[in-house]
Length: 231
Image 1 (cartoon, rainbow, N blue to C red):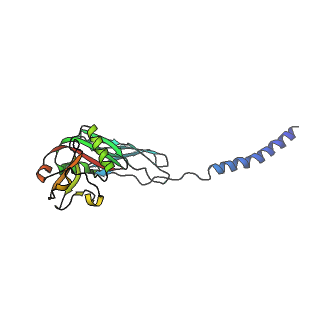
Image 2 (image 1 turned 120 degrees about the vertical axis):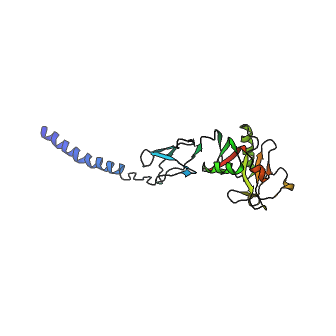
Image 3 (image 1 turned 180 degrees about the horizontal axis):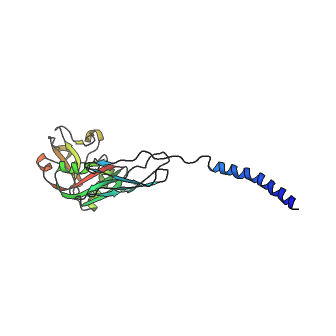
């Protein structure tokens, strides 16, 4: 009897062991070896974002932080993707002296509606650049209406936008696009636009239109402007 039990036990071991091994091989046939080896970077102006990475395999999360004199705005994490790349950074570092900024998303852009210490048009441009952004470029009516609506809800009156006349013959955005190449503008007085070197543009929220100002006005301080950051 004992001998029969012994034979049966040996038979079961011989039969099931290969099955277990086969299942084990199937489970590990395609182990996930993908790693995000390239460390992400983001720096603008005089700051660099810090990345605290908790592992570099798929699914691991990285925590973002800014230097002590800046505040992080946006999504403060990234993740390692199956492509072997880190997910896109959807945040930036805002200087602490930009005390009352408001962030909003519209299509492929994140906008910063800024109320700060008094700044000239060139200074507003520099502040946007220090946040890895530019003064806003308005490409179509839908975007223009969104900006007007959002600015009004936040109490902005006449923020700078990123349009200026650099050569005195046309109005150009930071990207190099013009109102002509974009086939869109929203001038308050389209038939009497003045083309002079150094003129800049602000968005009049109350009149829901663009106004061009001479260089002396552009060099005067204003505490409102809109930055745009591509996400």
